[in-house]
Length: 245
Image 1 (cartoon, rainbow, N blue to C red):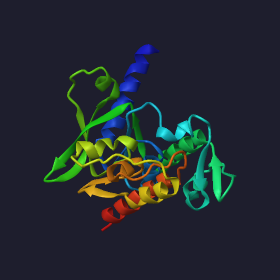
Image 2 (cartoon, one colour):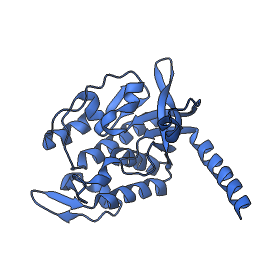
Image 3 (cartoon, rainbow, N blue to C red):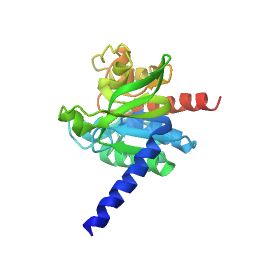
């Protein structure tokens, strides 16, 4: 059986990665903002690839609040979680509680079911740029980077790239965008500003989620996730508008 397993893995893996080599949109980071962005785009038949450096999806969401298995969301920003079937429990002051692992899994599944692809264990080490426009990303295995081995990377091209890498804003840094770093915690303003600052920061490059807050120096908000989801949704809507012009 071993001799059959290996060629199956090589063949199927090659075909999958080859399909990812050219997409309409590449989303870097499979956290709540990235998953939501990919889900919303894929629902509209946009060809989307998510690139995640870890071996799991969900980003910081799965850690809940200080590793307690609970997250919080405002009622008015809970639409996406409701749509993908996450159980929401009423709490105080117009807030809802949910299981963050359930949310991460169901968001990822919704994105996959809508047609998005997810690559894990792959890290972005540079961007592709032509005449001042970001046209995709340069990638390598996360394990190769961790081992500090010199191995030439490969490239994944796209019309638009979304930096949803969280606090690091890693793609923006690679693209030469100033990253101010997020400010102190103010949950209400942080929720508002993460959506406000979701935008195209360089031709072909959008920023979403905590990466948007980091770029602009906006407040952090802790384990409340509505702003993350709304940010991902806004990025998807703006990209979809560009793609359909």
